[in-house]
Each structure stands twice: as C-alpha cells, then as structure tokens.
Picture 1 (cartoon, one colour):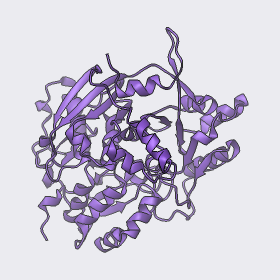
Picture 2 (cartoon, one colour):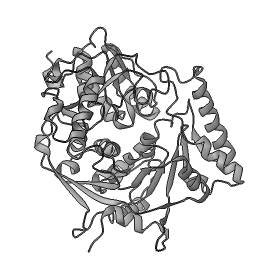
Picture 3 (tube, one colour):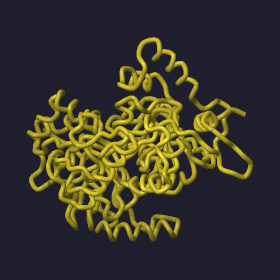
Picture 4 (cartoon, helix red, strand yellow):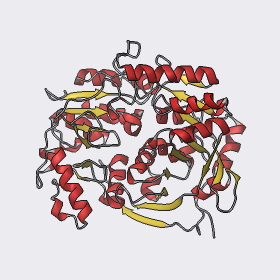
Length: 467
C-alpha cells in the first residue's frame, strides 16, 4: 500500500517513535507573531533554556499593528505590551524579527511564502490556526498552542500522534466568476465545521490544479474552518515557478536539484485515505455566508435559509441562533441585504492577486456613499507591488485608500474594528460572533464580491454591475 502526501512528510521527519507514545517530529520552520508567544519565552527563561535553532525561527508583527500609519504611536496598552514582549524576546534569544517599518514585514502566513521560506516537503508550525495556509506548497503546516511553542523553541521538535487523512477531490472546471474563496466555502458547507476534525485534508482534482498559488493558499488557509489540522496540495510546476527567484530559494543548478526533490512529494496512486469527499467544480458560484460559521453559506443568488430546512436538530438550533445574531429573516434574498462596511485583506485574501481583482471591479467606479471600506494588504511587499502597478490610485479614486499591512479587521485586535450593529462584507476567514467587533455581523465573501458590494451597498457579484 502506498503513502499519502501527509504520511510521506511525516515519516521523513520522525526523530523518535515508540509503541504507546506520540512520535517526536522534527520541525523545519517555526514562525512567530506577537500574540500567544510571551508565555512560551517566559517558560524558556524560567527553565534556563535557549532557543535550539534561532536560524529556523522567524518573527513578525501583524496582529496588533496599526494599518493607517505604521509609525504612529500605538495607544492600546495590551498591544503595546505584546509588541514590547515580542521585540525583547526575539532580541534576547537571537531570533530575526520583522517589526513595524520593515519592508519585509507582514502577516505571518503571507510573508513565509513570498520570501520563499515555505518550501515543499517541510514541516512548519506557528502559534496561529491559519498556519494551514502553507500547505498549498506541499508543506505539513499546522497551528500549535503556547506550550508547544515553548517545546519547539527549546528542541526544534514536537511530540505528536499521526493525523488522519482526508481527500477532497474537486473535479471539472469552475464557471467564470467563481473563485478559490467560493470553492473553499462550498467545501466547508459540504463537510461542516467539524467534518475535518483530526484530519489533514489533501485537495486534488482538475479545479485545484487550475488554481494559482494564491488561490491554493486561500483554499488551504480555510481548511481549519472545517475543523482540519492542516490542508495540503501536492506541489507541481505552478508551485515551482512561484518559488523560483524567491529570496530564500536556491538559484541555478541548486534550484533544479531542489525541484527534483520536491517532485517526490505526492500521494501514491494506491494510497488509502480515511475519508473522501467529491465536489463538482461546475456547481461552484460566488458565495456568501449568512450565519456565524464559515459552513453557513449559500450561493449569492440564493435566499437566507430557514432553520427547519436542516435535518439535524443541532444544525437547526445553530441556524436559529445564527439568524438571531445576524438579524436576518429566512427567505430574504441574499442580494437584498444591505452592507455598512467592507473589509478587503487578511491572510486569506490579502495578496496581490486579491487586490488586482478588487481594482478590476473598482476602476472607473466609486464606492457607495455611507459604506466604510478598508483595503489592507497582507504584507508590505504586497503593498509595494500594488503601488508599482498603480492599484493604489484606483483604490484612492474609488474612495478607499490603500492602507499598510496587518491582520487588521480580521481579528479586530487593533483600531480596525466596526461598531455594534454594523453589517460587513469581509474577505477574511471567520465570521464568528464579535470577530470584527462586538455586535458586528460579518458576511464572508471573495475579494471580487466584496469589491462589487462596496459599489452598490448591498451583497453583489461583479457580473451584476453596470457601467
């Protein structure tokens, strides 16, 4: 029997295995941000330990950082404290850190790939659930907790039990207007928020292979919203061309040698998966969430569902609670829902391709009066690229200046948050109660739908706009 891609990576990183005990897995890259890490470093200090491989550890500031002016004074005491801890810890333990003002700074799951640090066949961890983003490169990447962060810092290893394997096959081609964000929302609706619990989800099929690397990152990023530990896509020529010329990727003959190694990371034809799901790509269309989990979404041309349409009693109760929070009436067309604010950004949809989609919709148009819009790039490199391409001028003319990079309204840990009762169309990954501010109602959408929605002030697909 052959091996799955996840099993191949796992087996190549086992340091120690013993009956009745978790495997000890070697970690190739450890990424850090300012949230959830101070206690781990405090544990190192208390035990008198050092960081085992600071050269395989990288920090960035992203969650608490301002996006209107990165050099302004931060006023939130909690944010100040976390950033101060991050800077002191990285300095004391010899870890490279991208701080405010650094041209390489950005959201942790955006800068890893764009710097070429994320490479096929690796194991990668971070104190953040959306570490699964890096799985788009054929990397076994997953989020870890504070005690695990300390363990990796001290030993560059992690004791873990093997994960189960799920395969999601997306056959056929997606229609024009459908995006990677729509695809992953459709997958999550199919398997549910807990359907992937304990699994690594490997995505296969024609529609997956047709995605760009940025689209693949969007898919893997939101695997965690289906309960999965990680998402994976086998590397191919699309992957290799994306990595070519990146700062931390070998060049010349060394790159060719790496590619030959990277090509070994795929699931064997006779590999057995614990669970399989098939999705017809032809049925994917622009989607929007109506509830308070990413699984509660429908096509944009549908209506708000009635709780009684759900067969499972738990799902019915969850739908009723969600509609109460979202202040929605069953049967309401999604296109009739007015929006107060639009957020474009996050580690899900804050890359250059996402900003290009927005610019294509906004060129020659103006944002509707009364709609608050934030456009936040995923990194300073993305911001610089957008400026080079003139996207910032399109955003400015539409009425939403390009901001600096950061997690921004995705987590609302900085000043980027909405007011109670506001309704937002957002390109981030989560629509939980209060995610973007207390009492805020969030609808998850693709960048293209977010852009069109900003123009009309209601949930809208770009194809519906008229010049």
